[in-house]
Length: 246
Image (cartoon, rainbow, N blue to C red):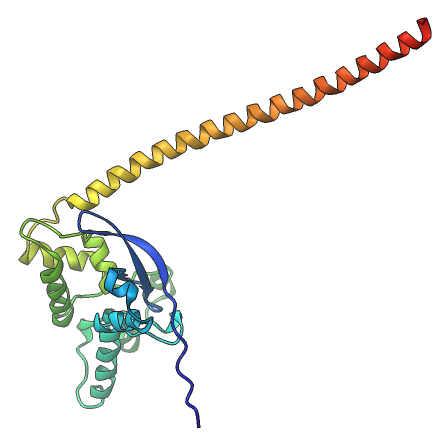
């Protein structure tokens, strides 16, 4: 019996900040939280077999599925394992209601005494999720990797780190300020933003000038066609006059 090999995965090609310049890369997107991961296309990786890209992402903690919808980032994989472990322990040890917002909501719904209809007309927002010890540990480990002496390295910020770990940005800011330092200004990101804004201005000016040029071209072309038609009509009348007047 011949066992068919799994189909090769194809990843989106993009450009990312790398060192002091931009570099070509392949992008993987989590099918759960839409966090992104990148594989810089180095000379070695370009010459390697197609499976090397998949191995690169898996080495970084990603689950590479059969389709993009099945891909999972390291944070979602950890969350899945944590949830599974919690479900297994639920029958042996009750969970603390205050650790998760949905537990607080469920406990309130089961134990609260009946209230009047007037008190229930105004909906109340759920309390924000609380950061537990495991969340703090994961954020701290990530900050150890991407935070330098005076600020973030590369293109990292509080926002990008929060998206990468699929956690609230406020959690990242709290841990960073408590144990690392200020978010600071990211030189690479500032340089990229300035270059991008300058390019956008030039591109907008170019497109406006191009539009005006095309409109003027169309106007002149229409005028040329009108003049050509009038010239033909004048020539026809001239030939008629020559025939009739001899």
